[in-house]
Image (cartoon, rainbow, N blue to C red; front, side, top):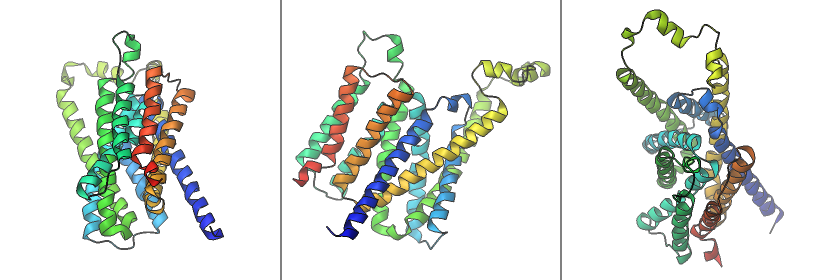
Length: 338
């Protein structure tokens, strides 16, 4: 190996390390209790995250350098999927343990592998088939709850989390599928496509958020039945925010500052690891990149959940996590190299 090749490999692994750390940081940020204390609007929050993506991508790319019909086509498709991905990921991490949610998201490329085998006629090895079976077993071990477990333990994985985690898995897989089509048709304009997709996310979430707010107002009991003075006291306590503080909600000014800081941090972390992963998936062998990124994400997210959020693991769940990490390696076809 020449000096230049050694330097290139070192840089690739450095980029991979940064990508994993950014992905884990993003997971932890979305799990912070302060998100609920800020009463963050999910549509506005993720629209802000997409806006941060646009700023960073424009700076990274030095502006726009051309576009084609494929840029807009795949930008629109990716924008629709990205809106669902950001929304469901946020809800999944906010309502469930980090290690379980991370495993679900990291295992999504199994669906991408199956699609590639069917559509692109990519060969699927026995190792990959074994990995898919192992991942199904891992999900069962992690989510299964015996009847004898306490009510508190059963609440760790609510139906709300399961629904959002399932859609998080689906949207994660769809992003990989869309990128495969885009890279075959318009790879030179990846940054432009991502910028346009982020704009689509902002527009789509603004429409959905407005619709949700209007629907919520119509369902809310008529406010006319409440005296004006009583409404005022319900919205703005005369104690200057003491009631809000006692309920766990931050005062308005702190809420705005905290929500803005979280939006910026999540936007930077999400943009960094997604953009790096697009580059690394083409620069590194998939048999190396996928197990290292997904395995590193699962391991570090599990450690973060245990150390920072005191998330406990049963023996069955630990077996499921281990099974999931082995499945990631198998599906990547790492052993097929030998």
